[in-house]
Amino acid sequence: MSSAHRFDRGHTDDLMSFLAASPSPYHAVANTAERLEKAGFRQVAETDAWDGTTGGKYVTRGGAIIAWYVPEGATPATPFRIVGAHTDSPNLRVKPLPDTGAAGWRQVAVELYGGTLLNTWLDRDLGLSGRVSLRDGSHRLVNVDRPLLRVPQLAIHLDRGVNQDGLKLDKQRHMTPIWGLGEPREGDLIRFVAQEAGLAAEDVTGWDLMVHSVEPPAYLGRDQELLAGPRMDNLLSVHAGTAALIAAVGSEGLPCIPVLAAFDHEENGSQSDTGAEGPLLGNVLERSVFARGGTYEDKARAFAGTICLSSDTGHAVHPNYSERHEPGHHPVPNGGPILKVNVNQRYATDGSGRAVFAAACERAGVPWQHFVSNNSMPCGTTIGPITAARHGIATVDIGVACLSMHSARELCGADDPFLLAAALTAFLEG
Image 1 (cartoon, rainbow, N blue to C red):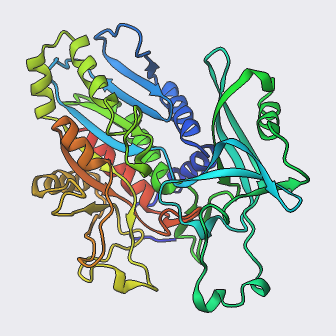
Image 2: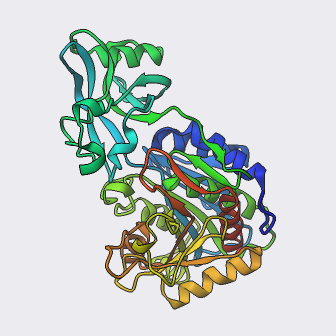
């Protein structure tokens, strides 16, 4: 076990439990809300009038959750400190007419969600999760967390050149999971899902379902210094942000209002009512100001003093592909959280943001690293630039360095989740 850092196995153990219990964004929101409730937060409905009382509150909408804590003495112009993250991960999602098949196999029609690393879903035992919508307008979570589906790869005997020429997957033809034998029957999958959820099939009128790997998270390596698991992009940050918010509210004399904003749909552009491109965060922050008796001027003052840390996973240097990385910036596992920089604003970090992040890490006593993309490689992006542009909020992009990003199973240092949470706590405490 690494002795160089303040490794808290309890935090990483808890992250593993959170990952396993959150196979879909809807489960991640429910599990986050449950943790907040235990810490004294209370849910408020968007359709209700809000009051200006102090304490912790949160709003949920689909796969998104916004939580905030109003400390004693907060004024309408008190600025916010926001940790931003996202609940969704690339995967395979069930189509509206899911029952299909060929050659005596029953299959499930799926659509590819986000930048899915296709080959990582092959020959893997898959469960089914998400939510179903009922005739009365309510929703029910579903989690079939056992081997149910599988996307079988073609045997090498029928694709002799695969190891020489590379695996070539047709997104439409080759990624359809099997789940049994026989002829497909219309409505079969939803009847099965309804039964699993204890519902009548005729009451299910809509669904948002997806597949997930049923292999649990695990420590890896001789000294167990690594963590392998699903959906760490970006439930690792959701978990760390939740832990940081709960820890920060116990601090005396908070000079700001700490906020957790976990959005859906980051992996496909954030353009939805639950994505960072939508109005949800702005509405929540504005209503919080107005509920405390604030004016438009107070809201403008609060936003001008607000800072957001957009926390998402980034790339650790890959030992087998080091030429793909920027040679002067090599983030490594267990080196602490990374500060992401891109002068073309694919990340929102600037020099002022660097100073804010460095100060938080210094207060927390954790190391940190830089990430910059190789100039010859396109740079990814996050909710950071979206948040900065949409709300006029100073934003800094950070995260944890990992390998196999967008795989069905990713890899990071086992120290880093705790180190990230410690830095986020120091940031939220102002």
